[in-house]
Length: 167
Image (cartoon, rainbow, N blue to C red; front, side, top):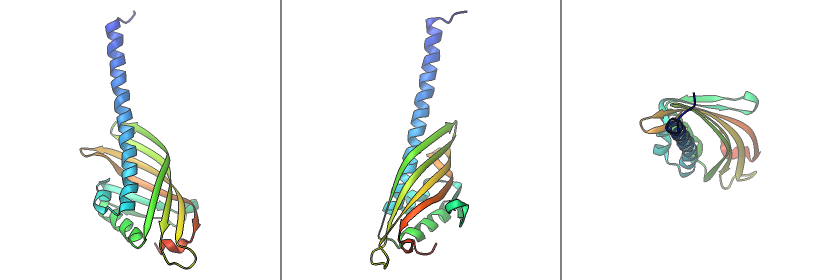
């Protein structure tokens, strides 16, 4: 049995609404990813903490799966970031190659970043540039999308690793 024009219009209207919602969700996830980088670089620790769910987990995996550590909960995550970045004179985190998949109120994100770190006056060089990959799980909350799990994998680095200090 053939659809009437009204039935086809209702289906296409519902499909259009679904597509708009998915695009809006994907944009909101990318905004969250960029807000994370901005909060790090501006040292806005309150904003950074607000990007995570209360049960969030942040993990670091070194190159080839070596040298990892993790923190759970926004306060512990912010404390780690603050201790790592406040001694530096500047940082700049640039994101790219983002892929977002939304499934209802859950989402996944993968992306890459170049993370520039500067500490003036160090022998051996004042900067360190690292290439990292993020693999994230996110959850829709009443306040918008938030990270529920963030895994950072260090892929490569160049410059003076002493800029990073001891972690």
